[in-house]
Length: 415
View 1 (cartoon, one colour):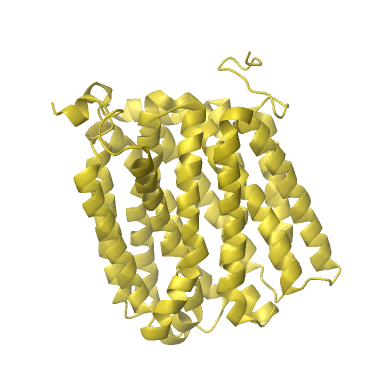
View 2: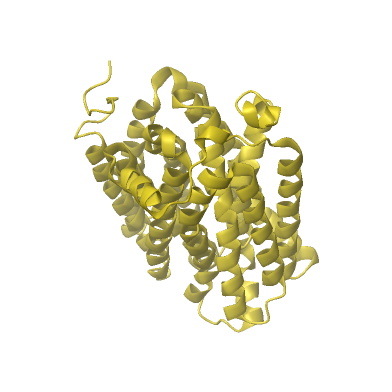
């Protein structure tokens, strides 16, 4: 038994490096999604896809693979440890990134995007599980929020990165760059990350045990309530991502402003993550995230009203969408932490179940919103408002009808 395995909490990278490593695991997904957006017209033209709405499959195919595969990685990580499974997943991501770069047809590209998402699913499951191995409660929420902050710098620059690559190379080069970043993560993880799962905590792959673990994750009121709430909020985010390129190109006829305004909107999430990391240990996850959810619903409803009344402009869109995404940034990390909090003893399996639900259903909701694009911003803003209300219902279920109040495992108000 090595020292690293014997004491996974105290060995390995220090706090700042650990946060950055977790952030890069999470950022791998943001890069694979957002760097594609400026390239969608070129991909469609190159592979003969005339319908703009059909190009959204480049995003959605990745998200479906990313969500569905999470259900596999959790039990594998609980049995074989976090590090080995993480490396295998990132290797799959690298392979399919290179396949996408060589895709001769749209069908092949979509298949490669599904595979790419399936590989990167390991980073989502393992990032949460590794953090849960080392931390819990508000400290876990702080780590997730700080990681989210570094990770959210990626959406700010990812479309610009994609656009920059397009200035000097064809769209296929974007996938080459994604593959190289995956290789970098593999090397960093191999050298610096110890195994965080104690040998005595490894669980055998037994159908009955896995079924019971999934059942617990999906029937625990707090776990499933916040998972469904996160699903709804994620659906809104994916609806924006699916629609963003068409909104800037077709609605506002301002493709030159796409990367700038997208960076502003993503910056709203980053600023929110700074605020959350600063305040969460003092105010608690519930107070911050519940207030932010109410803000999300109100701002989305205001945005829908502005759009329906015909007063939408690129600047009202930028301001209101940035405010909405600021609320999202206060919600995401906290909802994820609260969903995982009662699941520490089955962290890998619970994380995979929660991630599968929130990503698959969220991507389908986002795709449904994106497919309603009709040359206006109305479908997206109505979709945001609807998703926010669904999330509120799920939170009320998780908290037995009361907001802002922490509860213990028995459902009574925590002291």
